[in-house]
Length: 297
Image 1 (cartoon, one colour):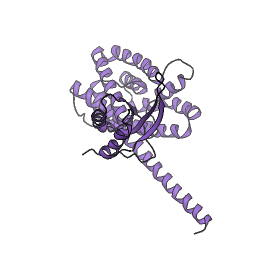
Image 2 (cartoon, rainbow, N blue to C red; image 1 turned 90 degrees about the vertical axis):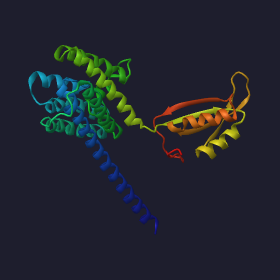
Image 3 (cartoon, rainbow, N blue to C red; image 1 turned 180 degrees about the vertical axis):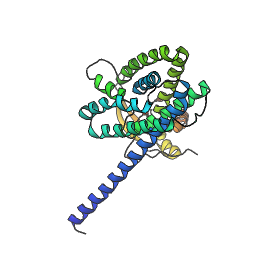
């Protein structure tokens, strides 16, 4: 095979991978949007419990006017789609448009189905979980289901607040309004549902088996590193360090583990050097190298 044939084959393989990734993204954005629709129409709305953001405003307007919820969700999010298209990017905006369209249609079709429960606590808990799972899936695959997130991303460029703080301020206003429209007990259930959804989103995005980074400083770095390799099956990297107070040269062990392996790592370090310095932190994403998540036996 000559070089031109190799280049052509590589391009075809890349195109195939790109199409596969695109199809996967579309599938999960649709799935996540439908899941959010189930959380809204089968748990929250029938029990007069709100979500935050544009969806929360849409629920209030739908209740007051009697118009379909899906109509408000779609119309109110359209301005944010155009803003996001110009300011954030084409791929993100198109993914968001797909998600919002599917969400709007889902709430319309699900509106006529019987609700899963009329128990307020069950509706709050499971509605928050289902809704949060749907939103988390869409975010994980590059989209968004609420224009408030786009507004917050743009606002932090001009305001001294984080994305989370801008969204929180916006939602305080929404839940306050809900207290007057639906009653203060429903407003408090709405805040609880929002908190549950928020935590579920974190779990879906990070994964239950999230990765962690560990830094270990010890005079027995060789022994600890070999034990991590043998007993955890994890690769380690030795970094050169220097103590600021003593000026002594130190070896720093760096490795990536899963959340489930953290306890075992600590026991290895304590067993070989109970005076070792150990720091463990959360890692949002790991790519490349030889790191693979696996089960602990």
